[in-house]
Length: 606
Image 1 (cartoon, rainbow, N blue to C red):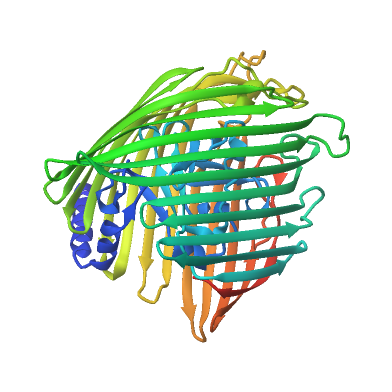
Image 2: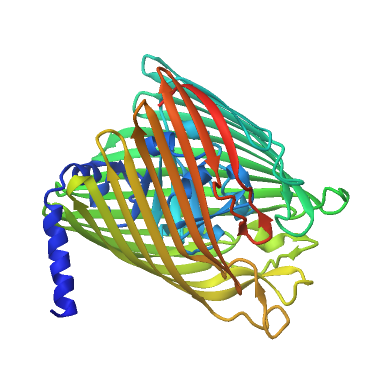
């Protein structure tokens, strides 16, 4: 029997087996998502790869921050500088940490000062309804920074009252709570959390406060106020010195549906965000390189959607934004943009959906950038789908990449935007017993990628538009959900990244790269929630990363576990992190905590 014939038999068998899968496929097709298109659409019509972390997963799995939840997505490489998301870089599909776009309720959160602050997300964990991760280029929908992927944190409009107290290793104390109120058409959600720890080593202590209040008026309007404050030891984060950092972020956002006008459904949103960063390079020499930064961002958007010909839809809109900074190190700078975008979605019969989108962004400093994209989704059978998409993405440099200076780093103001073309193709298969399998092949070619380079370890890092980066990869995902609420999921991502050899730009025959050549060629994640007798629930998770840091290879396996039991309205949880006491680093030179345990008491919620 030939190899081709065996493959054909296997594919036919899988498709036939998929005919018996009904509930998993129906849930998938009917789930409404907001990140993969310019307007909310059913997941079954999306032509791009989208991962959804549900509220049920958030409630059950051993995760203590948004960063911990994103670790469950194999294609998201979390490179943390501490526990509980105190500071973390987020990378998707092998792209650098600045090439991932973070949104909250569809509004961009990326900080113009530095991509290292994109993980400062002012949303308490309990206030999250779900997280949608759009894999691949997203600039045609969202503009700059959506190279490797887009992460959209979607907040809850209402939730049952809850409160929790937690204590554990390294003198950890934490508390969370939230409540909802309703009066007529007005609904109010208030959520808060706080954490404190003395840390697992010198200058790695941390404390944080996270607050959110969301007011919804009917189904048309909402207004959100949120605030995040962090105080953490930053030992070795950006050099050998024992640094310390204080950050805070305030965010105001409002959205409104204006209703229909001449057949167009109109929506608008506006937001203001300010981020503060106080960085002390060496706590033992406080007079040397102490920096204060304050960045601001104002955004406004107007969007309209209409049905064309009974089935197709057209969405068009404009938005504008201004970012500015006041800094003792970077000095005072600003950048402004105006953008226009449109998306066409066209069904062909009941099984095929095509889409095409285009966005043009005009920056006062960097000129114009056009970002087209197109995709198609085809259900060959009710349980077997093919999809393919492609598009262009771009990123503008941060203020840090252009103006920052300290004893270890010296930026160059000449660096300019990066650009990328990316494509993917994949299959979704639904088997009997509510199994869902997914496989995707993707590729990306990046140009003028910004990196920090130096000739020797004694030199300062400097910024250059230096790389052409070619990336190809494979994603495999499997998930099964049971009526009891139990689930099991696993994902694998393999990446091959090739970058042009870095030479001469830093003044030597060869240069050292700080970020671009650090990635994870292989990543495997798995998680589950299993109910046991006696109302006990077991929720393990494991992450394996094969990391490449220039010439250094590392294999890290980190296992976490939650055991919980419900007593009426109370939930008692015992969690263990890094069960194997693995010694590992996600950022070169920054040690991660060893084995730790916590116990918590939760009242209400879900």
